Length: 483
Image (cartoon, rainbow, N blue to C red):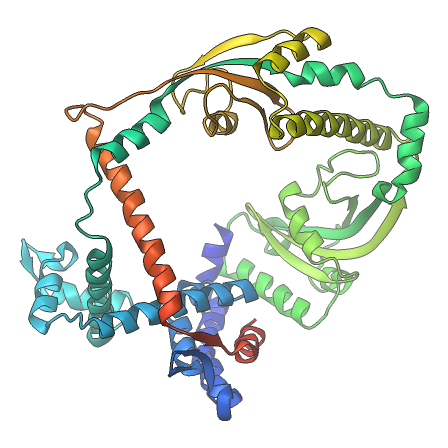
């Protein structure tokens, strides 16, 4: 909210204007930077060399430019999208897919956005172009290219009609009833959770580095309308002060200097670990917990930062980072050790069972024997379909539905908090009637899966047809230049 308001202050408008003006110079500069020899080629597709300028022009019109979010991974993702668009364009040209001016005009004139009183309005069309900061030539070129893409995709996957057996297969996978028998393995684990003091000490000594923790100490000032502008409302004056502070941070000024310059007398100090807890294992209530990950990303000592949070700004300086060795007597250490020892028991027990299952040495009879020997009860359950979460969570249900009838399996969540040994006793298959209300839904599901498979095949075909050689040095140069 504050970020939005801040954009409307006069000083920020100047900055935005500067940024907009600067963008063309940034991209103009790129031409000189990579204009020698192969440095002008960012990728070669077959015999065609794709220049860096084409990629730069592609980046210019991406949403990431507007968000000023051009990190290395974003540029790599943009390049992959750019490469995909180039391959599609080459296929469109190879297959002779065209769209006449008459057809393009018909598409645009039938767009609801450009209509007034149910008729195409040139005025509405021009207003749209102005609002989106584009022109007719560029917009119509993009529309034409998009329609050609749709024609290409329809050429590849259009007209697909899934046979009834595939529709039934998809329906059955989701709606089949599964009758299972299950053992809660947490009851088996609990029998081995009595750890001696020697076991705890031994684990601590062998894994002592696990009990080192960094505590970051920061100095911070909460900035609001009361201490920065002597008022209760957000004003141009308030945001001007924020911008001045922002500029001082860029100049390398520290929190004490800024505090003295703006008469900000209250500087607070807090310490926290990566979980936002202090040395007493308590969450500090004075500093917003949600800002802590952002502070830790910039963990350079004496660095000064400015964050927005709700209706306040926070001026932060990282004062020091201390590496603390937790003692064995620390309750946090002991709890961590016990938790890790418990997980070790769980992993070893399940690993032993999974090994036997994979070797086909743990079947229904072994399931029953394990229950008796360990004194664990067996429960029966009926799962009505793959979305039935009355007993098990969705992730566990999905695991259960991957295996066939009369199979013993282990299912567990990622944190090993819910763990079950399961025997799939009986599967009741289901079939869909053509007159069912759900038939169209499953017809479309099967069609999408078939079409997706065709697209995957086409993708493999493109990889074989077009030899792609990426100039990684040039791409790295773009990434480093724009970051």
